Image (cartoon, rainbow, N blue to C red; front, side):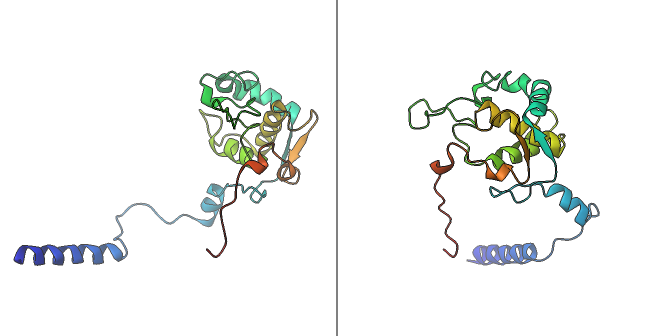
Length: 177
């Protein structure tokens, strides 16, 4: 009995200490508003968060060849591993051999921009300028026959692109529930 009371008292002291502000450990500092803004690079499906800039299919083709093709293949179809495939797969999602690519699966073009901006290129994520990200996005969309040659993307045009699988997702979010 005494053991369980001591255990409960000890647990109570630990949880109350954990609820208080942690002690300063002598390192680090609060992030500045500028540092927070630099890290706040997410782009929503509706295009909120897209930066100024633009890029064309032609610019993206050259950049893809020098920056992306080593992992994704020359035209996004023959990557070093199948999970990196960017093109093809249309009409396969309802089959046992579904191929999830930008053109067959992704519901929003803005998601492609967001992913490229955050995570690509593999050896140096976040090293591309907004113009370069728009260009690579335009080229990948062109490889998937979603935009024509000559397309120039920017914060106004990108959210207006209707992806082939846009209606393949169900929005289960219900505000207030």
